[in-house]
Length: 232
Image (cartoon, one colour):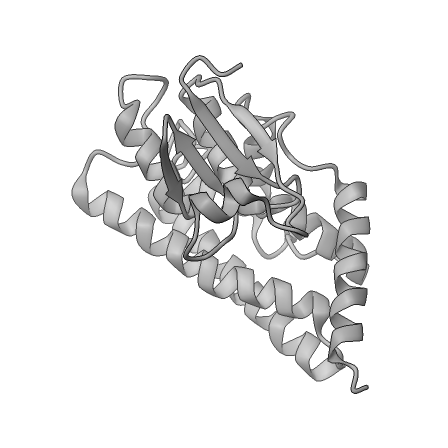
């Protein structure tokens, strides 16, 4: 039972729920992880997030908070004296971190998802090219802001690390499905080293979804979306 009266509505495959788990771990907070099936959606989820009706939702006492980036910021603010800071203290650095997480959720999430479900080679290539562009940009961002240290946030995992690191398991699934590296040390050597450090961090290790289970989930998702796209 969580000692902070915290409940997290999540699914094992969600990179967005993973962000919240990592933030809670950084702050050393206990919580009840309530796994949603999403089909059907539970009454608790529909009551807690009536607008978007999706996970993750963090319930603090009787107060629900939705959207992963917002939840992570909430955790960092409410428990600012726990663990290490997640967002930078400098307002400009904080704005930069928010910008890049928003960029990742726009460009990386959409292109990687669309690549998995693309029905033709032209679409697959266009989305893969977009993914490579994101990685090259993040390589530059890491080299610029890490100051030669392990993480985007320097010595410690920060907001941007969590924002992109939550996608790493899905990235590995993509690699398995297409049979080639997406995160390639010849193109993005700093990101490759960063990824190794990220998955080994105590707040992350043991919380990443198993690749093989995620791969089976992804294959089922692709089949369902392909079937839905076929004319009847």
